Image 1 (tube, rainbow, N blue to C red):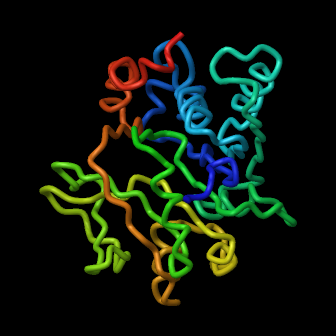
Image 2 (cartoon, one colour):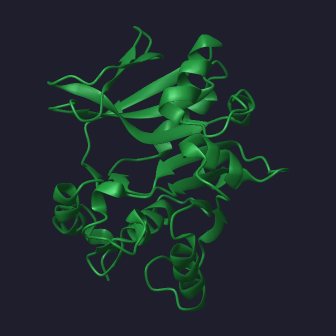
Amino acid sequence: MPPDLDQITAVVLSGGLGTRLQAVLPHLPKPMAPVAGRPFLGWILAYLQHQQLQNVILSTGYRAEVIAAYIAEQAQHPTDFPDTLSVTCVAEPEPLGTAGGFIQALGPHPLTPLAWLVLNGDSLVVTDYTALARYLQDERVDGVILGVSVPDASRYGSLATDDQGFLTQFAEKRAGQGLINAGVYLLRPRLVAQFPAQRPLSFEYDVFPHLLAQKARLKVHGVTAPFLDIGTPDTLAQAETFIQTHFQFLLP
């Protein structure tokens, strides 16, 4: 049987400045962009709880106080996600990069779950995270990267794998169909212990190349699924329709 997701702690990376969205969100961090009646982050948290996750840590940075106030308000008057979901905010003292913010969020002496589920606070993939957890039944697998098949991978770059589905490299950005990195990772604690000590630290540019050089075995779980990244004004404008189309079951 695959492990239950309640044995896994999610870390949502919510600290980015969102430079490309400053004109439309001048005073808000990207995850707090209002979409379909609640912050985009609220949809992420509701979806995590829907998939039976119970514990979430938010790695915050730019305007961290805005996210902290939102979570505190939801704790008192839950409307956007159930109060059965435990959510903790950990603010970066300075910009640490995606992986640096993740490590900061774990604290100096983290409680060790079965695995960490890492997600971006500005994107959503409509898929079953339980499918990632199934790979943990194989002790050869150190971690899992969620790949989404898209018709044009030029904005994201693509994931290259061997014939067993293990990551071999992050390929350069190129036009055409590809399996892109969706920014969703399932990481065993033993893998996190191998992260470089440098800060700032990026998952894509520092951590994964380092882990591949160390012969870590990272499975790529490829899906064809609805995917939204609100990192540009054009894609943010698509968010309302995306939520109303794919998250009807979470609407009040």
